[in-house]
Length: 296
Ligand code: AMP
Image (cartoon, rainbow, N blue to C red):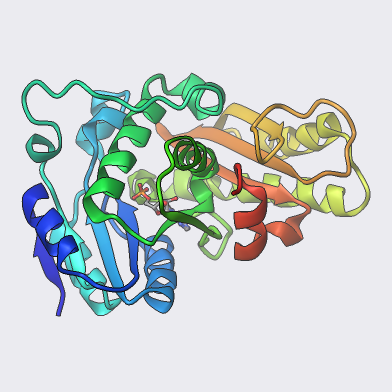
């Protein structure tokens, strides 16, 4: 039986009554196979599973994006029930941020570039809400998707810096047949834009193939991805970056160490992000948890 919990008090009370390991999956709803893959991992590895659904207003830096974010609560709860989730926590913004709310969590360095630069305040919103949800659910393990790689790095840093006693598990990106990373925002793409969005995965794959063929220079790998992206007139590149996966510092010289390639593209007014570890063989769970962000 899946139980919906709507208040923060009730969540804390339910949590206190749970003995044994707890896995948590945090989402903003509009669920897809990517979210469900995190739930499956949590189900396999913990005695209890809590999923949270909260469209967190403080991590949106555009009011339109927040307003237009898809909301499908009933369907989501149904999907989570079928996936074997024990509790679905669906707090309101008023519960999470009551009047005179004034505390925020800021992870300084790894939040600054990439998404942090394009979306000011985004990671402050994310690290604050994740801290609150971790405190409310007190999980043994929390499951996050590689799709939001910088978010994983930020959360791992926050968890280490604030001594949060939760293991952060990173699960690989679930993709559509053409390779497009599953995302709640994909439903906002028109048919031609949806078709065009396949270019993001082709750019990552082509760069990874060059890597596997021996290319190790980040500039050459970035140029490869940019050339593929330029072949799609509907895609407007925000950034393509090659970074150290632990620190997110840019890599500027040839190296045999793993690199993280991150891409952000606007297509038809929808901002899409994706990434891959190079070499491509590292894009699986054990390697992701090892390489992405600080460990230990
Ligand atoms: P969101 O609802 O977009 O905030 O995502 C909730 C969680 O699901 C985050 O940890 C995301 O990284 C993860 N996630 C989103 N898309 C995917 C995907 N395609 N594959 C795996 N995990 C994903």
